Length: 201
Image 1: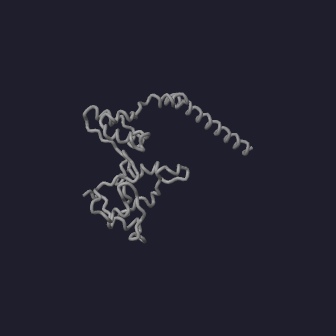
Image 2: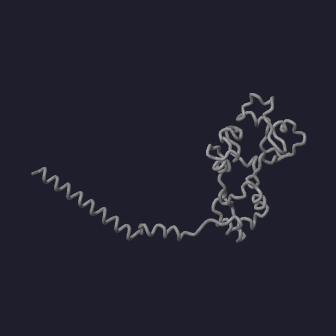
Image 3: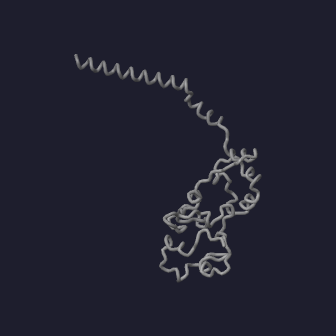
């Protein structure tokens, strides 16, 4: 008898819980609007945050020309710089228009980290070894590579006159193999003892 009463009480509690859950859910749907129809309608009503790359050319004509003739010609500005509608609206209004940009090293790795699935002729690097690290921190890709006009090898940012040590590896048109004098050098620690990052003389 006690057992039957407990089973009935338990069944009643479960039925009451199920009823409350169903009622709460249906009331929430009506009050908040969480239906399958409402979700896409909400997203479609949100304003677009992207603009075309041609809008960027209004202020950045030289950059637009360089990138149009480069390997990144098919990459939209917003693929790297993010949604730019707000930036463009501020600039058109004559206001300061900062545009946040993710760390270039992380951004470039999105497309250029070496993967077996990428075509062999697609520029790929191993981020663990390229470029050399300085003081435990990896250099940003843009120290050597211009993302708006990428090339291989990258454009050297200083004159080559009187830099025989540099020309052992780098030339104006091609990379050179590691010279015998560098044999045994640890690329992650030794390069920047001789090679200065910000040397622009």
